[in-house]
Image (tube, rainbow, N blue to C red):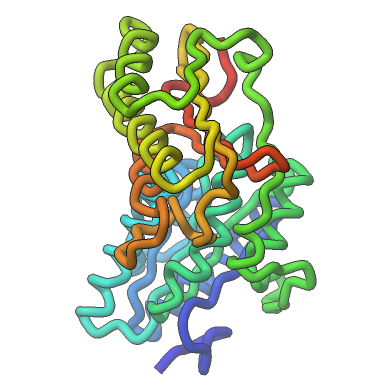
Length: 320
């Protein structure tokens, strides 16, 4: 039997916590966590180092709350989804009727890579809905940009307040609709210069060779290999499922490689492609999922001229 605000709810009860002080965060987190322990529910904290220490200090010794390394839970959206699904499934196998988690994205996720983390926040409404999960996603209004907070409201069905209210979000958008939106992602400054590689209708082998040649000596070998796999999958998908012309362009900077693959089609029809593995034969789904796991930033855009996927290996934060 589920307890608290999620009592009687089926599936994922997803809330945002937008707080403006440490006291406001604790006013939400402490009763949420202690309520879970009192009900015998698996109760988890996946906050960053500072906030985890803050919450730990507010709880009684040996509180029964599990603390996970918050920064380590969110390396990439697909990795976070996979890790959490494994965690939730394990708790359910142990008999959990409800699982409580409070977590937060690392600060870097709120910068130039926010677009794919916003897609993550939307996709998990579907990805976790088979589990009896009640989670709170914490956002500090003192440091979170206004445009990010606006998307938080669109990707979380409800929010909780320091005075204990649980309110629906008036701007919430269902994931299947939200994920079909395709606003242009922030441009990488490297793209203001001519590409180092510009190929039309390349084979997968030509694409792999181009990446290997451009990335040699710039990135760690594992990063290069991951990008080679991601580009190969993306080019293969574009040739197999897209429409001509297929074009691959590559820019190389001191700390990153940026590759775009475009074709004249409209991209995958599955709105969750890339964020969730697909076993149903969805067009291009598996290749996108591999790309999302292999790169440090992935963006997609549908425009009048077709579909473009941008893959970044190395530092995606436009430094250097």
